[in-house]
Length: 429
Ligand SMILES: O=C(O)C1=C[C@@H](OP(=O)(O)O)[C@@H](O)[C@H](O)C1
Ligand SMILES: C=C(OP(=O)(O)O)C(=O)O
Image 1: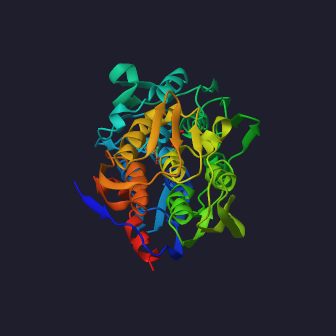
Image 2 (image 1 turned 90 degrees about the vertical axis):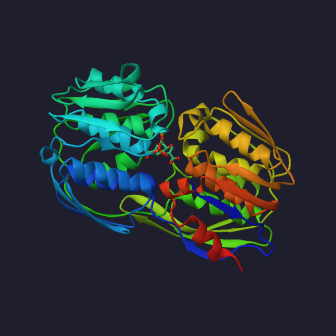
Image 3 (image 1 turned 45 degrees about the horizontal axis):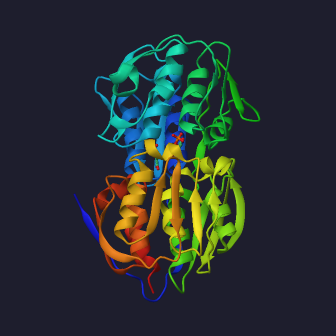
């Protein structure tokens, strides 16, 4: 277990950093490359623990994958190239690996066992195993297939029209992936639009994807063709520095090549609404995904309400948005965010408990939290609880506290942002 001590920054954060590759897109680049025909090359891959778990699982499924830092080569041999693993598929801490891979395994005519860490063992999987079973796949596990370890025997599957209760890209992607190998047209309808990287990247790999409002559909029997994928910077990682730039006095930070897919960019809307000084420049499209450089400077912020369809567009950013809200004038209310309870930790509880230790005036509600702004935060010993985003949110808070913040279990941060502390150091004057 590692501990990192974060000190208050006295003279502002300045300069620019290149944000590491998007985690969601890196997972998909590897998985789709593994089922495509031909050699896929990936540039800007995120070498975080979660994405390395994806590589490890697909290697165990018989796919030749080479990875060196941010460059990955995947020798895809189509869906049939996947073979029965002799070892257990260990997803580590990664929900995305678990759920998307289940969608792929659901159609493969062999047996596999999926396991992860203690956090994964608590995350609900019935949201994907139930629909995948109804397509014809044989899946079992604790609590009737809701929790890992899971055992899957895939095979012939049939298309479904699935109405998801949650706006979840992992659910949507798992079913669409299984749909690609099922007879008929598979559709997924969600209550609000979740991130659409699967739709965009499947199209890049040559698949026809139909979209109609909140419904996405694919016809079975389509194959993927190998691609060269360039991964944009992860807006969920950039979020920590957007908040740092907004709240650490006398700061001006530029974040380079940040993915600004509208299904992910809710934090930009929030920052603008709160009154942040934010400039977007050098906008371009790469591989069907928009990206740009973002410059943020310290400014006076005001509290707002964050709810409804905005929530899926910033779900992973809520821990650091809570830190931001402690410095805004007035109250910030976050609603409709009950999905936070089933992430790496119950992020409503962990954000509230850890920020309270720093003296924040924050209260948990059934579906979110209420934060009173303009809090003078103090140093304290806090924990990531093994959740990378909680660890990073607390470290960002530590940049403005009177007294040091000791972040326990800071090793969890390597799940999505191995160079996080180096980037903080690089921005100090
Ligand atoms: O599809 C993805 O890559 C992800 C989808 C989201 O989860 P849900 O699908 O559970 O909302 C998000 O929280 C996660 O970090 C990554
Ligand atoms: C929820 C997250 O990831 P996953 O679901 O892949 O574990 C996250 O990165 O915040």
